[in-house]
Picture (cartoon, helix red, strand yellow):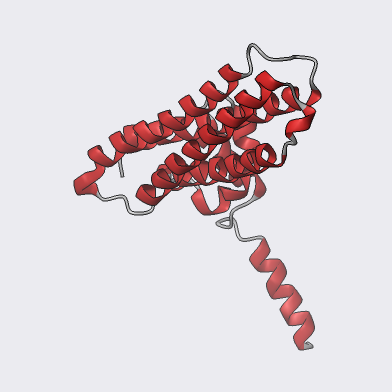
Length: 189
């Protein structure tokens, strides 16, 4: 038998290994992790790439949730920084300026959270969970405050509607990360 046929047969046998992580298992992992979140569809969509690594580990899911929140927050902040002031009214400009600052503060809180999640210790676990809950809650509050700034602004502006939509989605992603942290706090290390 040629070596290429042997290799092909070996590959086929290995792919049939029941202990490998099948798409169904990966889907079950992310579904289980996201079951504690308010925005489950968004959670599954954003976190499914982490399934094969995270499996049933609450600490890895919490880290993944914060990582996704950081990426999303950066994208929204980039969008806000690129938004041309000439496309919005004066009141919207003030809200946009405040929102940029709030999203930067939110990003700082998320980065602090990820740094702690990377070095969890059983001896400091309760204090770490308390700090993490504070920072992730602060991130949510920053985004909510940003949205409040646009409540009294023009609803006709496409730019303002896009800002609201993107910040709202970012708020949902951060909410999911807090829910995943709460699951970790309840389950322990």
